[in-house]
Every structure is written in C-alpha cells, then in structure tokens.
Image 1: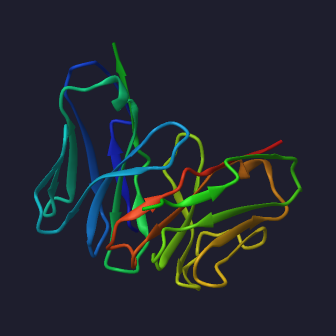
Image 2: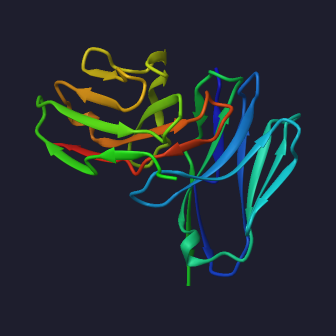
Length: 112
Length: 114
C-alpha cells in the first residue's frame, strides 16, 4: 500500500529560527515528490517538486531534499517568518496516471 | 494565468439535504481531481478525471457522492443525501496531464452539515 508519513505532526518555533520537516514514503514506482504549503482556509500551494534524479531543490527560504534510495525527503525552512505558519504537506506520485499520495501534513506555528 | 476556480466558498446544510460544488480548472488542464479534506488531515482523493473520463473513483462513496465532467472542462461534485461526517473542505485541483505534472489547487469549498 502506498503511504506517506510526515513528522513531526506539529511544531512551534520562534521567529527567525530554522526548522526541518520530514517525509517518508513507500510509494512505488516513484515519479515525483512535492511539498505544498497550505494556509488556513486556503488550498495547498506548491513549494517544490522533485523527480527521482534530483537531490535538492530550493525555493527562497525553503529547501527540499530527496533520498530516493531510502525514500525520505525533508523540507528545511531558514530564518522563519510569522507568515510561514501553515500546514506543510508532502505529496508523492507514482508513474503518470497514478493518484497523488498525500501525507497528513505538519502544522507549523511561528511565534514572535 | 487564472487559477482553479471553485464555488461556493462556504456551504451549510442540514443532514439528508443535497449539495453541489462546482470547479473550473486551469484552461488546457486535462486532469481534474476532487479531494475531501477533513479538519487536521491531509486531502483524500475522491475522484480523478482525465478529460471527461474517470481515472480513479475507488474512494468515492458512490451511494451518496457523484461527480461529472461532461465536456472535459468544468466539473460538478454532488452529495445526496449529506451526512454529518461529510463536513469537510472539498478541494478541486487540476494538472496539465496526469500526476507527473504540477497540480494546482482551488481555494476549496468548506461544507458544514448540521
């Protein structure tokens, strides 16, 4: 069964600090892995998308890594801002036509 | 480029009533998804269309949920009759072709069944 597990479930950090979110998956065959940011009351917005051959991808203060051998990914947020408070969802898809497999998300709260 | 449009944004109905949600995907996107997101959880796929054909509806409660995408463009998701446990955000997403291309999400419709 294709599964996507995220940790931690929730996280509270001080503004300006860094944090790292984890994603482990069992989806096979693998096509790509995405990280989405979902603000409360809004739809998810894509941060990064990585294929099998990509190890790291950055989008501003967000840096995602992928280890396709161990089936693990991380999302590192640098110098956090209050606006980073949101749910971060890891989504893994198999080869074209297969459904997107969603993790349950990590809820991040950045406090002043 | 216009994003995925959904309406209504919010809906409150009594149990056993019917409700319909509408989604207009990004122009040219062949794949359309409907997801159900219960508070505190990740989205769960209800149905995936490729143009006007159904690719995956294995998790759609077909006794009460139905969806159509007649002309391969916009789509409607219906619940009839609604139950309390249907309270959730219903997200529509679209992608150019299949899951190997970027999926863009709409704002969602928040349904409350009382």
